[in-house]
Image (cartoon, rainbow, N blue to C red; front, side, top):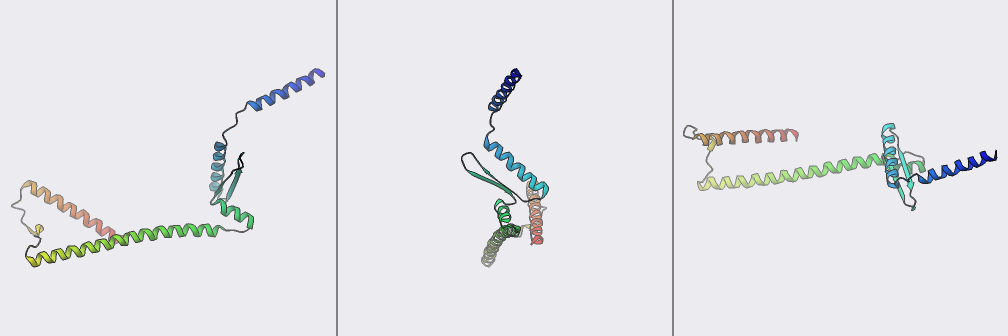
Length: 172
């Protein structure tokens, strides 16, 4: 029996050595893995989760879905606070759409200003007798092959621009 006792002590020492030999995984890799699992679990189960980890140097790292602070506040208060999160998301969407609208309005104002300038130039040219010739009313019988090709390309470009403008106005 004494021999078996020594054998048991020998096994214990072997176990300790194996544990010491196991390399510790990098904390940041483990943390990232845990955060990924928490997020996956939240999405798959449609659950609200929060994970707070304290590292060996006493730094706190937190991860939560949909929002760590909201989940912790809900846990501490014992009531649902998701309305604030949803409201915040909706406000962000509205703000983005408002900025896009303002950009479009600014571009529209620039186009209107450009149109007014063009009309003024055309009016002045007509008054002075140097009007812009109606190139589309000209005869194509006297044009060379190269000129006809350019004319065709211009008409196709005009057609494309008209379609784009029409589509843009339909969207408005």
